Length: 217
Image (cartoon, rainbow, N blue to C red; front, side, top):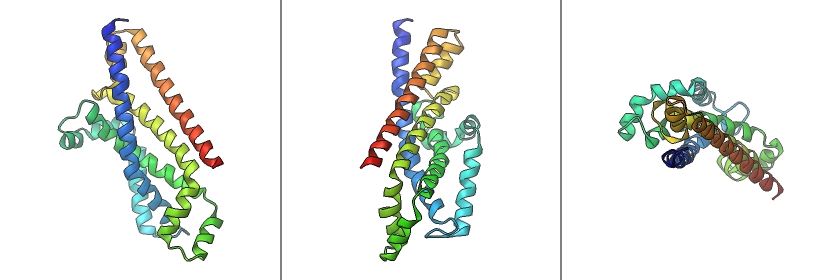
């Protein structure tokens, strides 16, 4: 493997990290509130609202059901409008974020559903408002599950980032495609695959450790 390829792989690792970090961050900025709304407006919850829950749930389900490669193509005009280009690391963050938002929303909703109803009843009996109960009782109680779900989501975004290489998204996916597949350099292909697998495993292990540590505190 030449020095040029090694440099390209190192650049690909950095670009993959950038895409994963920013897409995960932005997806949680939007997805976390959506997940809280889905939870709190569902039947029997503190802010039950059938219409709001149905509309948001429908949007989340439709977006989540689209295969990511199709979503990448569909969002090309929007990505070009938003960042001025449809290729490159920055451009790839847009579809990665939009693709991850519904996953985050459902993970958050699922984590909050695990909270013991007794905690909610205790908070309500003390006169806490629904919003106060959600922020100060439900979310902190669900934090270990939220952290573990967060690690899974980051790993998912990392996997999606490899697919972004198909439309020139950069990162390890682009390296694997350009050098490993198109130029038949199998060593490059397997190296990038191995790096992606290692990165996913490290993220998941870190998430599990943080989640366990939080449960003990």
